[in-house]
Length: 401
Ligand code: HEM
Image 1 (spheres, rainbow, N blue to C red):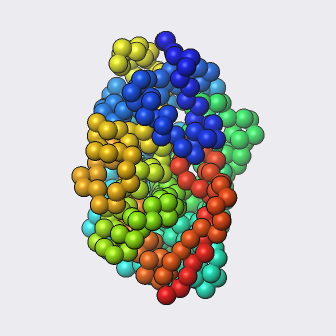
Image 2: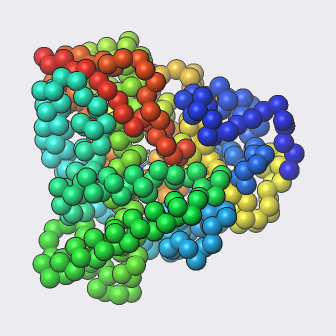
């Protein structure tokens, strides 16, 4: 496949990670389908291509092995790594727990948690927002939905840190044996933890998602024990890092655009569209991989069967063919059909939940803090995985009303 030496896109490059948008613009224009030199993947950047790929699981499968890793060494994938009809069956078991109506019902409880966290942060004056609000809020909420003790959240954090530290990086560079061993260890701990909780629910059912999954498992044909464990781990991990990054990006992007922050303070009904705009403008999940199931051609480039293709959601979300003035951050943007939650059959299960969590977190901050600002302008530490756009620490000074 031809490559153009004058264009380089290295997703591990630090400067590129801080600001990939000029490169994304050039890639969309000149290299919409880019075969990396030295990495076994092809990148795709345009909105229309990404959307087409994500909605066509027959041509673009979610089921693939990580290059350089013996498939026998890794467990079977969760529904995230499966195609219809297996994916459809698994997703059908949990869909009902995340409908807009159900999530709406959880909103008062989310407000309560966010208010408590923001009040505690204000009492301290200077905090790392990630530690004080953007990590604990999503993890407490999902723990309560599943029915796992929210007090165990430090343990969940330790697990999900290991699970996501190199997420996606392995598509480009094979993971080290040490990383695979660490992942295996964490998986064994999570399996033991959820097996014990599931056994407890079999004896004492409750009104929670865990009980629902245990009942599906008891019916045998609907969910195997191994599938149940993988589902619980996916639910516990998938929503945390992502929503933590969304809340961090929301606060950071507003601080970088003071006029938009002032506009939001003056017009609070813009909160939902402000959250959508941050999802588009600073997408917490930057990339979404697929495997070609057959030989095909895209923009004149041949793609062989089994080729891994990475869809850059962050690039698609700044495509001028899909959004007027895509480089402008506009919290009042209408018709914001971004791809930050993916598209098609794997469209994010937790999208409703994440949206409300981000709205509730920012509302608590705006209600209780007269102002908030960065403690200094030192560069913030980036998330270790190239899948995510976000910072792992966000020191802020908060001023109470
Ligand atoms: C800002 C926050 C979030 C973002 C940006 C995000 C992003 C995404 C994306 C891009 C996908 C599609 C993956 C693919 O196409 O293969 C996805 C799937 C998924 N998300 Fe989220 N997510 C967020 C929050 C959550 C939350 C709170 C949950 C909690 C339940 C969650 C659970 C899932 C699950 C279970 C899937 C897999 C769905 C499937 O395979 O059918 N996500 N998410």
